[in-house]
Image 1 (cartoon, each protein chain N blue to C red):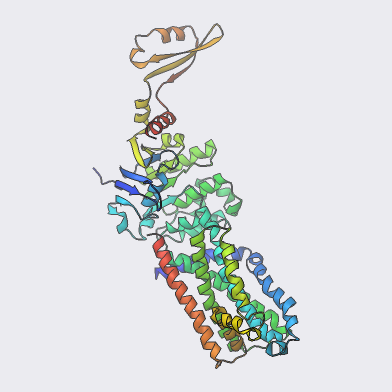
Image 2: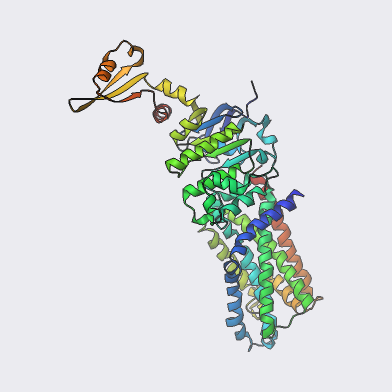
Length: 251
Length: 287
């Protein structure tokens, strides 16, 4: 199928710079979650409830969700120089599927997210993280699905705003409340009612809840279905919009 | 007569929010194997026409056919047949020159030219394994041209192909482009560089204000806008002087023969207009 072939080609093209310089491509973006784990997680150990009993078990799934959020929602930043330089437009004048130009990029971001998430898990397990292997695999899958949606939205945003000084401002403004209302850093059950209600509107909070249940191996928890459904819905809606946008771009 | 490769009739483009047409009714044809130049001041509509013809801009009026088929009837296979080199050098900076070409070559189903051969052709063979973000503008532009040629296209769209080049590289690139026409490819180029247009194009169109002001061969333009004759520079008694001698009276005019006999002539130039002169005259009169 031309779409699959083209997506694979674009994926390889996008991945090559990361393979050239894996430290920059993978390492630096790992720094933020590692710092959270090293400098913030210990603060939770004295807290009441589940997060205090074993702070890593509670905190790591959320950190991985944060990694997925930042890793994929800022992905469009890499497209901006190509939009400015004309490299992207030049690809539009090549016999390659427009949709593949988007999907290949998103797949690259997802591959990187998978490697980074696995690295974090392997790094933290010796420090006392207890996970259900099957649950962790399912949890990563949910994050990857959400990442597909967020990455697609990020590229769409980049193609819409095109300007390098506007793009990060919009993302900062969007991701900050998403993080604060997600329950990644502290449980939203501690929040006043109005804040808790807001957090329930935040799709990310449901994904975080699902991650915590999955990593604990609690597949029967209702949050698993809800969080997985939210991640899938974000991906489906984003892909539908992204496909439409790419087809309208040219040819 | 063979069917033209490009056939545009009353082509019109108006950008959203603009008060006037960027392209205001252009009609032209480009024959197979022809090098056709679009010349004109910035904002004249040259690049817009190129964007229409490369199917990157679909909102246009009038009609445009390429290879005998209306543009809107073409699909992705159109890009198998055309090569595009835009004014902005559009390479992937984090890849090497060779990787850039290899990545592009994989997008085409047509057999690609060998990457090394192509890089040698544009004098980048020695830096094939260097990352492109360290390249000068001239090097990027040469890579841009190589990229456009990689699948041996039947029709080339080139925007300022000699931009950022020193005279030696500019001449070499002109020769590369000429070779494309020799093998049968058609070339549609837009440029401000009159030397490139003069030496490369079979015909040029001067574009002003979204319209084509005039189309002809560079030679015909130069003759039409020049004054037939020669200009002689001579030195007598240590003083440099010059004279213009009309061509139609040159045989009867003994001045040149006298000056030559005295050994006073230093230079003799014909007085046809340069393409720069034609550009200035045509565009100024139509602005």
